[in-house]
Image 1 (tube, rainbow, N blue to C red):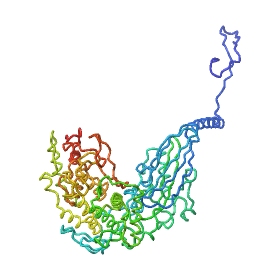
Image 2 (image 1 turned 90 degrees about the vertical axis):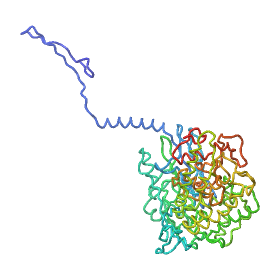
Image 3 (image 1 turned 180 degrees about the horizontal axis):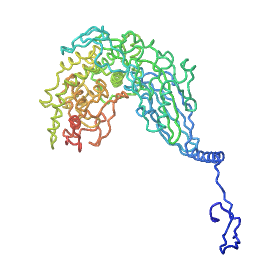
Length: 629
């Protein structure tokens, strides 16, 4: 016992008994008894917590963010503006930072905002200036239709009468689509609301908090503060339209309208809507649209900063529905901006200017902005647009950008039009895929000009009638006017689509073979650009359907049946999101570059069409040579 813990022996002796020979041993001990002291216990625990928190905080990154709330003022189409944020590492450890989505299915930033750099590492005491470029251009979430809230899907109830009546016909009117027996009610179209909701699920508590905070800022419940954090919006601020909801001068959407956010990508209907009469689109009188972009900057093992970029978008002819634009005197029903651009290209084609509409369609944003200003001024004044001072490549770039910016693609007004085109080309697609599969052996070069494939293409008149009987008047007239230009440039006898290499309107570029993005002839790549902006975007179309769409445009333009030889429709040649052509890159299939920057063709047996045909038929490619099923 005396060897025990906290036990002290005080005495030790024995009993001196005389009645017995046994003498018992006895001892006294001092023993410490344990007693719980809650107050003392809490003091000890708190002291240990303080020490652990200090060590943890010392190991976490600490940064400060300057200027987390920025208003860049008025934004116009194709006129970028920039702002900057300054991040300083004031801690004692390395800070890794990056911009993160506010939700599991949201983008890091709205489409109209580009961040540079989007991530980085800061040493203690170091700082970085983060640039943000705001630009409304192209289509999709970066386009004017999206940020203005008129992006929608016309669906089946597009209010038009194929006989040529106005798009806003009475609801009781019905009509037949080109003798197909499909009676469609001519109802007045209503602007549709397309909402991309953020996911409510989160993988971590931090992500859940980030989602909740971003949504609260979006809805005006919280507001960003100068430190980069958030604070509650008072009832008085909410009533006055302040706090988290920015009110941009003259906006008809009120102080609580927040567009373009990465966490609330709702394409809300504008006050005018897509069914407004042409006289309603007065660019000078139309209110600007308030834009708010909420960005989340995350420190690894640290806090989140909330950055807010606000702007006011001034409406433009770019991004308006075709039927809402002022119509040209001739051709009838063609919007004046499109008439001006196409007519200038017609004049240049007649003067044998080389390289018209040659892919990739690219120019500077400055030139595009100048063309936009001229078209907007014409739309407001009512005078004919004068583009005589612009180079043809700038006008061609602006024409494709104009189509990319429309709320709905040209051949998706209504969407039934694109479906009818796909149905009409289905047999041709099947025959083309079969031809590619049959000729997959060594030396199996083949061409789409074979009778069993070319015979399934619609004639030029049949293609135009198909669009005329299914699209609304503005879309049909626009299609006919632009196709007339494309026919002059790439039709039979022009020299650019026949594959013969003969000279023509494009000054002898002829069929430059494959290589580069998409491969194929100049005509194939040029028409593929129009197919990208004219047909529904992101509709899940397979490679075969995309083949058929380019072939349909070729048939409407009167191209040679083999103009798609060597072309791979599975590789896009135009970026609708950014509104510009995709620059070809070296693909290792040849040496040197062609006259337009594309690599030379490797020969007919290794053309790109086989891989697209394999994708359309459900097979994958192996070595890349032929189809190799």
